[in-house]
Amino acid sequence: MVFALLVALGAALLARSSSPSILASLGAPGVYSGVLQDGSLYEFQLPTHWNGILFLYSHGYVVKGDLNPAVDAGDIYTGAWLLDHGYAVAGSSFASAGWDVAQAETDQKDLLLQFSAITGRSPSEVIAWGHSLGGLITVELAQLYPNKIAGAVSFCGVVSGGAPIWNVDLAAMVAIKKLLGPKSKLQLVNITHPSQNLALAESLVNNAQKSPSGRARIALVAAIDGIPGWYNPSSFQPNSVSAQERAQYQWLTINDLPFFADYRAELEKRAGGNFSTDVGFNFSTALLRSPSLSEVRQLYDQAGLRLTSDLNELSKIKPIYAGNGPSQYLERYSAVSGKLSIPLLTMHTTGDGLVPDSTESVLKQLVSSQGDQSMLRQLTVSRAGHCTFSASETIVALKAMLYRIHTGRWPNLSPSYLNSQADEFSSTYNKFTTVNGSFFTKPDFVKTQPPPFPM
Image (cartoon, rainbow, N blue to C red; front, top):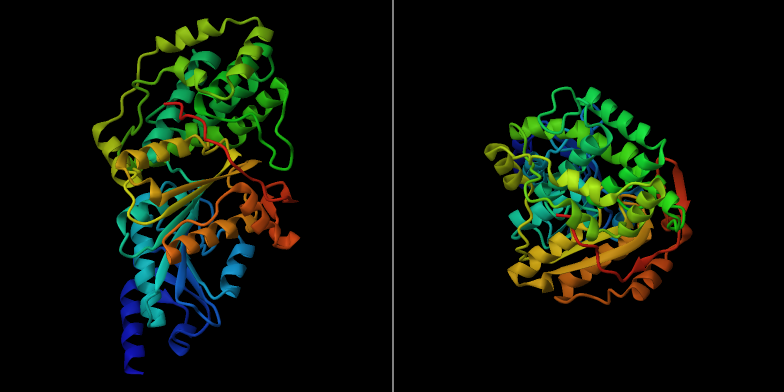
């Protein structure tokens, strides 16, 4: 009883408030929630028969002004499966919405302390996992706290680190302004009116979509940024160039432009100014390395435009330099070093237009430069969409990490084996959810190399 009171007092130092039931049922199975010292919400769940292993979840990007609850699992089916198999799950909201990588690192560490203080027991193993921006945070946790975390699984994560993907996004915005609105007041960096800036960017792209020449240039922008010509996760990959361009247009207007023209202002405020640059970016090289090269050429031919002329005009644009302080901020809180001392498993869809799978190429190169490739494995699912994984695919990946931690070697990660493992789950686990509803799907792990990163 004395020990129970001591750990409860320790928890109070970390949290402003917690569920009233915690003191009455210290360490008992159930849901625990509260508020960390900096205002971040947290939640964790203990199963009836806890095996000592904790899965620490990091959620994706939350737009400022949206609800920002604590999330302890990527989807309800995976969360339920983990609890049913004796694993505890935990996650926090992070102190604020937006690109809150810096505070997320601290909040997740504090959550581990909170978990141990409340339960009176430290996990035997902690496995970090997360989606999208949470996938980057997961890699950051693996780099920062290898003594606390046994393994990490990043789903659809920004595994290139923050600077590379924001630099390429800036190059895409440069191309949009030059090719679609050279006389417009579109702000590329140091954005002062985010919502108006987004509306202007959307109008430029929407107007371009109405003409063959505009559609060709949209395809060029998409190719430069690594945006695939596949948008609908419940459909097959389009074969016609018109359908591919339509998909890229959807990615741009629905998913990407908000980050390019609006949300970057939130990160600029955090960083203290412009944090990205297009210095050294070669538009022609980026296009030549793109899987969409043939599509762009065909659309330019159909529109009667000279592709070389547009590329030449882009090459003449004065480069944009990042501020020293802001770029150092991004380097400090969103950089991936490639130096791994614990195993890292990543998973990406081939048709991700928000965080393209080419970011996986950057990670692979970074880890190779450090010389310990045995710590990294990368999985690919053939499907459109950002983070459109079924629960069965997700669980198979998490099980693979458990195997790696407990045996010291990676399991069979061939697509055929992974698909057979995922096929053993019921149909409930073989679906994914989008804003347009839920879709049933078969597991579709594939063996492929991610395309080269544009920059």
